[in-house]
Length: 218
View (cartoon, rainbow, N blue to C red):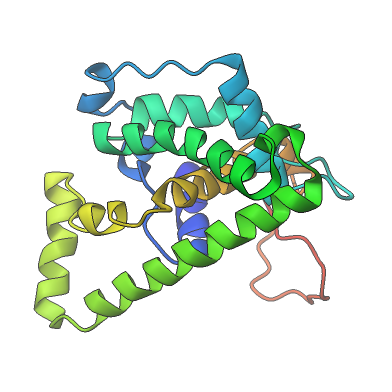
């Protein structure tokens, strides 16, 4: 799976634009990343690993923590995110712990796996509802207007949906979920263990039998 395929895959699953995807696909950094210095502590990375592991836990295959998704997040946020998104992401880490303390009386890394799951499910639902509202707003626009906005994003490098998304109070979780999926499915573990990996593919078969539970090909 190459970068572009990975971004398309995550976009389809989550139903929205992958933040920072333009810089990620281009293999370069955003202009803002040099202006805003975001330092992640070891505690931050540990927290991101636990959030990612809650989203994609270890089952028959290693989970997101084993794939070092927390470290991947630091690179993506610092190199591919615009300054406003970097700020929201950092503040969101603190917000996760505030919500955890308020609801369960302790920080996210110290509560039980079930409590972590319940907390993130609540954030996911709220953020998903907000994204659905945005999607409906844009779907109602005339086709030529939607085309204009897409062209603006592709050629000017500015995401016309960004301000709308940032209005979501749980936007930070959307970014964390996107990075978890993107980091895991572009990692060695994600490609070779969570998916069916063929190092040297043979002939191309357009249609092959599928059984429920079969892994996708990497």
